[in-house]
Image (cartoon, rainbow, N blue to C red; front, top):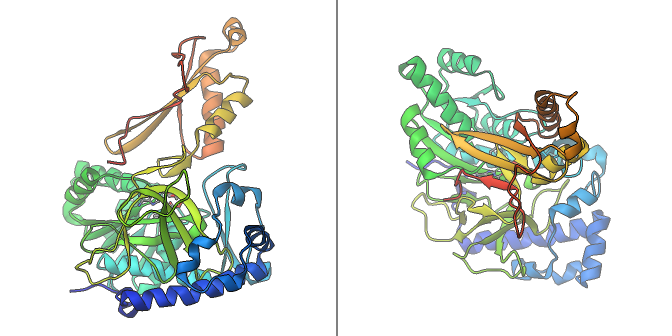
Length: 434
Ligand code: DLL
């Protein structure tokens, strides 16, 4: 049995697919040149005219876009349509300095929903399923994306959002959820609780669609075992739309990229040179159908490789290996994007110096994060403020900056080993990119 939402597109012969990409790329370049002054200037500076782009073979003539540019142009600099044609924004979990706001027209939302519908159908979803969405709703793209996809498939959609495990389990049992969508770490957490409470027989789940953070094959087997389901990977990022940019089929051997909407390239992150199929490098996307936030050659910072090896599911769209690392220092902790610089900003704001260390671990499939920071000599002399009060204040500052609970230890001066070279600020023990 083959599970397709749109077989005519998902199994399109490569030549036809590439012709479609070429046609869409040409139109998209004209669109950004005419409607995004920032891109017009970038193309002018690169000496590229829209007429120079005749198809996908000309893609490399176009300059890259990176996250710093999105930040500098916040909020409207990459907008490709008048604001009154936009119906939604979503945003990354970063803070003021790093936040990216992505805009969508109704057509952009339709395309995004379609991509998520393809992912749900590839995981065996039909209109008879009960799709339990416990990715966060709101600015995060996880909840809204899978929600829209589930509607398109015609499944009964449970917009649960994240948290409140008791309520999740109650609805799962009472309404017979068959497909669950959440981060892999939350799936593992649910699995553990289901086992502890002896609820496995009451749960009807058959599949899970998990992404938004790195996870290993070991974790997949664990989740499949404890929940008695098949666990599918799904990838995406806010800048390119959200979840569903790529997803796994029944082969569970890499994620098919939705090539009728996104052109993927792998580049050497240091030189920008495009690498051949199979080589590991930075993943770059060009959106060829999105109108409100039409990014060209966007550098994701995710490291992986692509393969066009025939997939027995019949899909012709290229597959990406799950991200194998990042070319920047961003970490995904508890499903949230965290930059060490954000943590440093909170510490410096509260009068500490940059003597700190961030320790990230995964215990029983749950992320833990601890920040250790030294008191300054002045703080050490001032006994009127207990260490515990200092720790609480940093915990609150980090919660408001990152949106997650971080454990904090305030230590005596000179407790953290000084490095002789580059300071080791982050100790990530999770080994996630195996
Ligand atoms: O995490 C979108 C999403 C929601 C994907 C739900 C899948 C499911 P952002 O918050 O913008 O968007 O974070 C994007 O998360 O560049 C990767 O580094 C990481 N990431 C996303 N999916 C995966 C995955 C959403 N399946 C960043 N495996 C990306 C590993 C992932 N890393």
